[in-house]
Image (tube, rainbow, N blue to C red; front, side, top):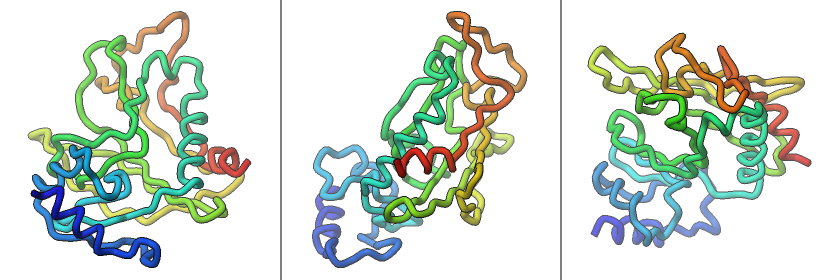
Length: 213
């Protein structure tokens, strides 16, 4: 029922004409939105949609520029030889079981492999990058997911977008957070390679330049 209703809301929108920054589709509960996320009968791919305070929105349209940047970002992120030994690609995954976070679906996600021990479960970082037509420019927001004393996820703060500019625009991820390990925990080598510490640094401007090529 919920999937069909959301699909009807999408069908009523002229997607060939409507290109505003965010397009409301219909009202829905969080459970109804989750049902749509898990459905194989989506009228519009949920990766381009979001549930915000009781309303389902189309928040972006899939573009070649977006796909090219996503591939370039992954290339720069995974450049350290040890990266794939410690981290696994989770793909375009729905973020589950976090009612405090918006119901969104990632373009790509990454998580620690079990070879590093028993990772602490949970989302650590959310990186949002917006690219313009022809990759003329880009801007980003990087959220660090915080938890309270009861291990509940705190609401994401308001962040202003940061322009991606040359010669470098570097985002930094804490290595232990990426691997789901306590701060300062031992990170054992794998096949004579070592995960970067104390941080994994990604140059978004380099990724943007690669996507333009």
